Image 1 (cartoon, one colour):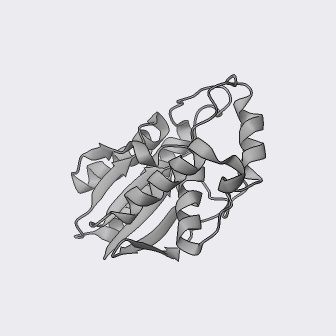
Image 2 (spheres, one colour):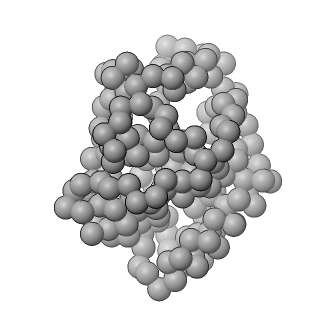
Image 3 (tube, helix red, strand yellow):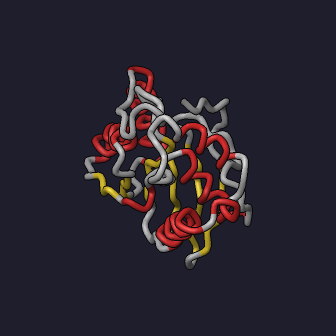
Length: 186
């Protein structure tokens, strides 16, 4: 059995519709330090791996936790944020995401279901306790796989919330959902 703690990144310095890869703002950096300390206290002495989305806000959120454990982060593309359609502008991404968040993976179809399925396959193959620094929709996709729910949004996850799942023989079980908060899509 492996326990995976999925950590949503800290507050970003810019919105999804204005910057495709923003870093954390001051609050986000503070949140990353706080979650690092909390996880470190929970996991003291437990061997873990640290995975992060390739996006800057996740890598910056993971950095303090990895440093406390003296570990390197492993960039895992599968845990990145949902891809946006390639035929829309950066400004149009917000509207697309808001609409998508009201529906299901089945509604989106094609490449989006493939993204979700690949993410779930990667999570199902975890064999070591792992901290995964990821994104709102990606973490919701894993929660959905755990409980058999096809919606894009199941929980309104707060920045640096921690969702815990167990992986037992390739099966995902939701142990605890992350803290929720009103989510601002900007």
